[in-house]
Length: 126
Image (cartoon, rainbow, N blue to C red; front, side, top):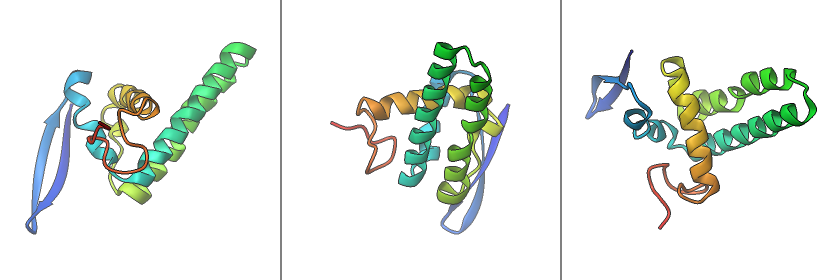
C-alpha cells in the first residue's frame, strides 16, 4: 500500500509516495511523524494506559478491558496528530506497522533511547 504525503519545499508542494512492507523499512519513517513534544507525550501516556488496561484484563479476566484498550489506544494519539502534529496518523494506512511502532517508541522512551522532553524521536540520548 502506498502513502502519498505532501511536503512544502521552498514554497513548492511536493508529493511523495512511500511504500513500507516490513517494520524495518517502516520504523525510520514512523518517528518522523512524531516530532512534536506534545504529540510524543500524548503517545507515551496513551500506550501506558493501554498497558495497564491489558494487564488488568489478564489479571481479572474482564476481557472487555481489551476492547477498551484498543479504542482508548487512539484517543490521545489522534489528538496529538490532529491538534499538535498536524498530520494524518500512519494508522490510517499502516495499521499493524503503526501499532508496532507505538510500542517500540514507548519502549525506547521508557528506556531513555528516545528523548521524552526535548528533541525529535530521531535524536537518541547519548
